[in-house]
Amino acid sequence: MTASRPSHLRWGSIALVGLGGTVGTLARETISLLVPSFGAFSIAIPLINLAGAFLLGFLYEALTRVSPREPRATRLRLLLGTGFCGGFTTYSALATDAAVLNSSGNLVLAVAILASTVVFGAVATWLGIAVGARVSRPRPSAPSAGTAAP
Image (cartoon, rainbow, N blue to C red; front, side, top):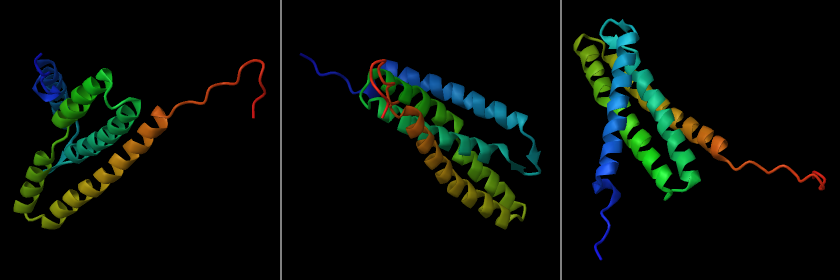
């Protein structure tokens, strides 16, 4: 009997991450082209990172509550969490924007954008976890026709 390959080495898993990453990257680029820039600074990149942080928190909580080992939840984590959010979020572009701002003499603005993105990203992740917990919470079942509600 041969041992099963770990999920990160299976072609199906790799394809899910690649597909999600491709769609996430396309979504990020589309948004960054549609949202106007303010001189050397693009507001799209921090907004994308905040949305991605929220989505990662939501997915983490909602899919973990379903069942951490359920095959469908695992596929969704790979497709949406690792793939889509990995391609969608971009802290390297944020760092590049901050470096451009710094080189144009806007060090305070660059540091403020970096710090606020990290702080608000943590808040967005927490909010995503809270929403994921609320959405995936088991619903109380309705009382039967012959029983009284408490």
